[in-house]
Amino acid sequence: MSVFNPTGALISIGGAILYTVGGLNPQRLAFSSEARFPAHPIPAGIAYQATGLGEQSLSIEARTFPHVMGGLDAYAVLEAHHKSQSTVPVIRLKGNFMGLVSGLYVIQSLETDEEKLHPFDGVGRIVDVNIGLLKMPDSFGSSGGIISGFGALL
Image 1 (cartoon, rainbow, N blue to C red):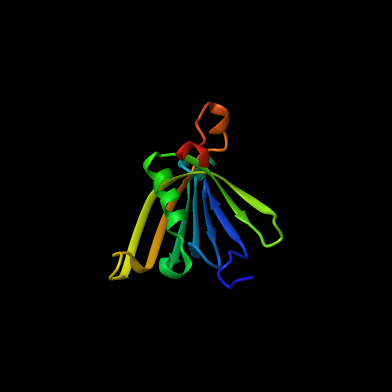
Image 2: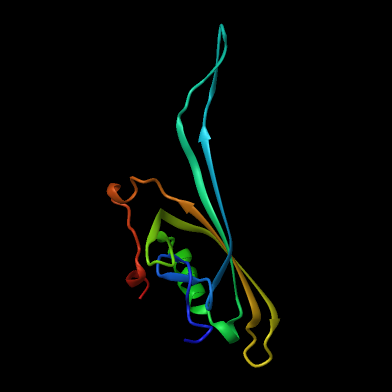
């Protein structure tokens, strides 16, 4: 088994798979959520009313060394999902082949930073990617929304 074979926990964003060893390597995950509680003045003070969850977002920072570990194929799939504004499932996989379905997301933002361009192909030796994901409502799939898989990109 080579040291560059994909092993360990994985993240699947639609058809793009982020590996912890080899390929596009997730470095940092950040989840953000808000809940709405509008205030209403009443004679006894202020009353708050829970009106549900607001926007939920997931931010993933990933890095690859494409000349050694690859990873640009996963970036190409992310870019295709982003450009087509696809709704894709996000799954966090575990080492024991079990996964946690995080829900349906759209890629709201996709940023790339290349460092130390290689003289032969012009691709950065270090490629950092920031993926901004916006969670769709749980009822999205049942309301006729289109969910894209890997096949929709081909």
